[in-house]
Image (cartoon, rainbow over all chains, first blue to last red; front, side, top):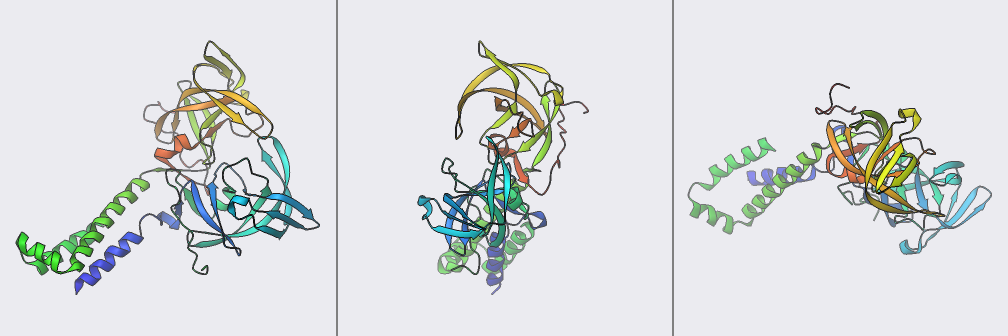
Amino acid sequence: MDWILISTFAILSLLVPGTIYADEKIVIGGIEEVILLPWGVRLPARIDTGAAKSSLDAQDLKVQDEMVEFKLPKKHGGLKLRLPIIEWRHVRTPEGLEPRPIVELEICLGSRRIRTEVNLADRSMVKYPLILGRNFLKENYIVDVKRRKTAPPNCPEIP
Amino acid sequence: MDILSAGSSSSFKIKMGSGPKRFREYLLSRPVGLTFFFMLTLSIVFAGEETSAAEKITIGEVEEVILLPWRVKLPARIDTGAATSSLDARELKVKNNIAEFKLPKKYGGALLRLPVTDWTHVRGADFKERRPVVEITLCMGPILIHTQVTLNDRSTVRYPLIIGRNVLKDNFVVDCTASNCFPPSCPEVPSQ
């Protein structure tokens, strides 16, 4: 019954390449789909090594004391979110410095759940609602722009 | 992979006896055999893909490159968010399809004259612009790259050169936990 062994090895060898690199670094493409937790909203994200911080497209943004209220883009469900502001930070944009509220989000990319800071901005001009910048990519990701959607979200705890 | 396929093929020979007829019978009578072959083929294909990904050069979020033939060293921001690359061009003038500009003073301020190969239209929140595109040669890591760059005044930004996806696509992967991890070392460029 050594074919059982052989096919097990064959299956294992299928799983190993592609995702795991030297030093446990995970290779992702220039675009990846992520799930926003705990709401379970799927969003396509641009993986952007040129951005220092991640940023999320927030529509109808309202600030109340220490809280911020905004809507996700209509195209991605338009869910209304209310989150505590961690801080305000001046973000460098092509048009100059701009103060933006920073919130903490939990996202699922591939099989990992990661808490990360994102700044909120109306990005309706731009194609992707979420930009994952270098603060996120420092979690041991390597970007290969030749690929796309190589790590579909499958975090164990999410249905 | 090599060890696995060698081991599996030898164990196959033992089980199957010899002769193409018996081999075929074995495959048809036992779907497991087919599945196994299918798996083996797939794993070989995937392993091949993995090798090609590993052959890509890993670079950091910022790298030093050499602009040729002038041999000017410039730090470049490696930007997977930019579709194309762009270069900081000061006092930019275009005459008869020739772009004339200076590199930033900090990097020698050389006056360059290059033919315009294309124009890009850039639209921001409150501006609309047409920018000339020229072709340049760069030494990045161990390879020489001919690429199109958009010219614009980038004096407000930290890096004089942005390397976008048009350059990264075929040869590089980007690791943001590092910078300056692959100093320019093209065999074509004499000792730097």
